[in-house]
Amino acid sequence: MPKRDIVKFEDERSQWIGYRDTVFECDKDKIIEDDSVFSLEELADLCDMKAESRNNHSHVGTHRLLAALLRSVLCREIATDIMLEIAEYGGLDGMVGWGGEPDAYADLGIKPPWNDWKLADKQQLRYDL
Image (tube, rainbow, N blue to C red; front, side, top):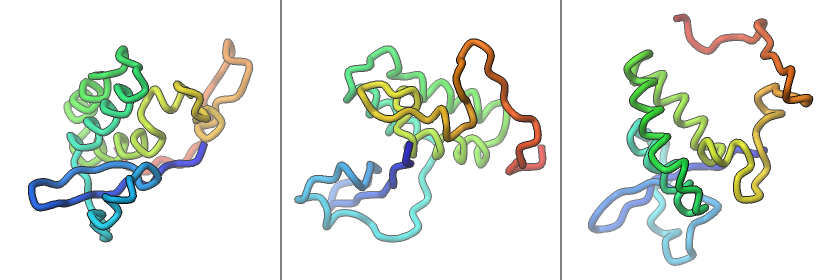
């Protein structure tokens, strides 16, 4: 599943984030073309709004809960990096292929059969914990 590019938008009233590939033509001039940094809260909200737009109401709010849990267990920087990765996949429901989108199982090293899956322990870690 290809990751999606997240961009920041700005108009005279506010700033918000969204996916570059779903921008309306009338909003293309509102994209801030820089190396925008997204907050943990913005990313969780984006994922929850994406779940709601898929009518997957059971996932609305789960990204905010996950963000709060990750921040309390890890730190804000690592929690934000994890939530950015989830958001690039379209949220947790997007990662499992909800709404007909490709899933992220293969990208994360999860192969069939699903009943006996294991993650490799030899993977390079991004952080020293």
